Picture 1 (cartoon, rainbow, N blue to C red):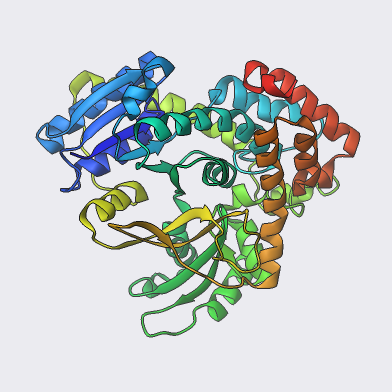
Picture 2: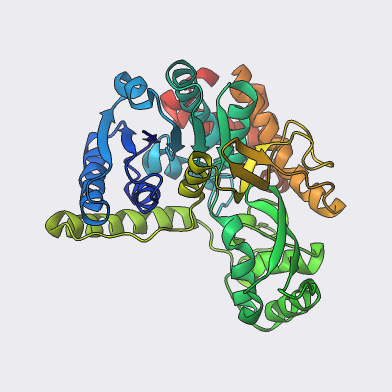
Length: 440
């Protein structure tokens, strides 16, 4: 029997989608489901909801068990076939709030702060120790399992696991499978969706739509470039940063404009405050999103728990398709985050890159891409540099690497001087308490 262990199962909406997808998949619908979390209430909520889903759409074919706290973690992982990771170490309150509010005191504004920037660095440093504990347990009780990581910052967390543990790890994101569709729909080119072909490669949240052809093999980029330029000139919309990428770099990238606004030194600039409005950049977006999601979930939970009426349709999340392909040996293609083992020629071997991967009974096999256009590789390198230094900080527990990662972060370096960066890092480490005690 397939065993699927979900780490961070208190992330109830996400666990519902991934496990719901598995229940909709014939090869997985009778799997043993192990739900692990450190929050008893949220774990119980997830169990109730998944049990209702199992009853309503799956004829109770799955066996669902819960495991609370580190003392039960090995049992949750024991003999797992797949381990899905969706943890958030420190949660929204207090850690995400700290990651936004302390930098704001220094004049450093952020939008999402979970992938790069000082917020992404701090999130990686408090998450890697927990994931390393997962890996050591897995090496003991399920050494052949695939670890499917959804937690951000993707490149730093997956990169650490791939370099410093023995666990088979792939990082998964939502943005690859929706990239070209979203672009074509925004530009009124829905007639080009059917039969299109594409190539996407780079790094997580900054992978590039390198080519896009219609069903007849016509290159769509010339008209995309012109339409994107005109759209940014003539209207305010929610994807202006990425359209500006097209205008100046020639290519579109995978993750949203609110994310990419903080991955570079070009858009959030205290000397040019008018750019926030000009490019429709939602500062402090992630805290707002968290508050709304928490409130929305509370309402939805009460409704589900009251009447048990819940159903599910298989989503576009990669996890169930990966599991299905490995279990059935039915090939499937994903965009996966893997170590750069000669996949992108002009990015470093230590980098975690996002490239097309073939999934089948033999596992996950990344595909060679070649060289990225030089300007795209250069943009990726501005993000890879702080990623690699943050990983080094986590490996060595040497605080000097944290300062260096922040100093080389594009947005942080563009706004703050070295002393302010040092002071901000020290204040963040202190505010995060036990999560960062190894750096004091």
